[in-house]
Image (tube, rainbow, N blue to C red; front, side, top):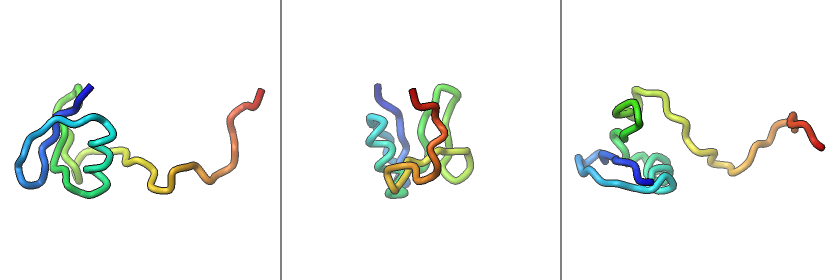
Length: 64
């Protein structure tokens, strides 16, 4: 699956989800297409990948 992305310089391209994550972390994305339409960076709600790589809070999942 690829995602349509518009970069800050106006270039439109298609990237895999990990590529979008990378571009978002580097602040190169102006907007990207979701199923519901274009998501604008800085305006729409966007979940960024965790920069630290893991959750550091208490374990709350049920352990079997």
